[in-house]
View 1 (cartoon, rainbow, N blue to C red):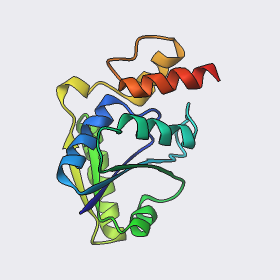
View 2 (cartoon, rainbow, N blue to C red):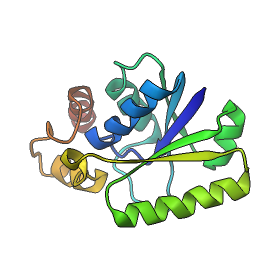
View 3 (cartoon, rainbow, N blue to C red):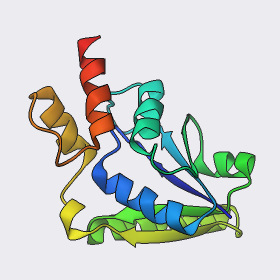
Length: 158
């Protein structure tokens, strides 16, 4: 069975990685896909996000990193995926994800959403907080996988 984990992944954090780990342990193939949210300002390009996802998830042999500029449902149809894995940090996230799951179901009744609650260790990590730390050249090891830290430093030099 296939599943998809989506997000803006700007950048992919240890909290995101926890969700990917769950997905990789429970599905044969997992697509981790950076999508565009028009309401957000991004630090990284789509190609950089794909590279960050690939580097961060390299230990999971059944994970495919990708980036897509379009609807999640369209991507899922293209890849014949019917399960989406979403992580939540708090009640507000959960409410949003429940509403999104309902919309996905209305779009295609074969779509199933699995919502995973992030562990206490990662519940306060957000990509926006990480971007702030990157801008301020602060320590990132609590927030990002070492492979992602290495890439972020490389991107900052260019």
